[in-house]
Length: 236
Image 1 (cartoon, rainbow, N blue to C red):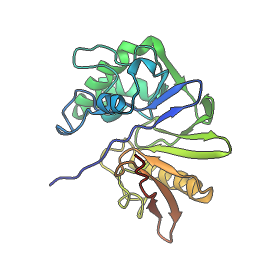
Image 2: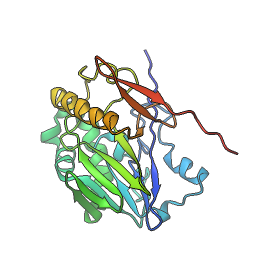
Image 3: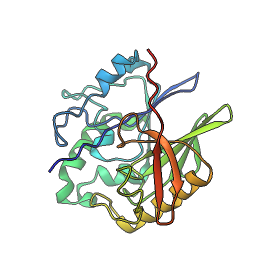
């Protein structure tokens, strides 16, 4: 009857730029009343919205682009450049492409993306979109769904966005199909390819919908993959 999917938005400080990945649901209540906390979380972390230099979208779904504007359509990150795959921007701002059953998704994409259209940068696969931040196309969940490998000082981690939505489902059996994938078979292929790469290279991951803080490691198994969450560091 009920499943809780966290929404973890990593923020990377490159020393030169403050980069936010994805913006949550914003004021939309479609996924329940507990969403839309990003602005409060930023404040608690001591980060002002006007200090964010770049907002990078993994894809155009409602729970990733929903926090660009507030309920009154005011842009919340006034100084940011915005990054998304062009194919996803075109798809999720077009009612004909997404279809009537996903009207709410298109409503939110148009509400949040069109006000910053003149500040949108379209990234490409395998592009270093910002210093130390590489975009890797992982289509299927949406037409332009992308994950990101962030590297600095010889270390890396991957923000896997919606490559998998659950640390057991879609991980232990990665070819299981998910109802909200635009192309479930393509999504499964992307999932296996990327998880293979991350496991082989021992790259730690931060997954958008995993239990907070969503950080852990991926190990290959006979049937799929196993997620090992990193112990939470509670330093006061």
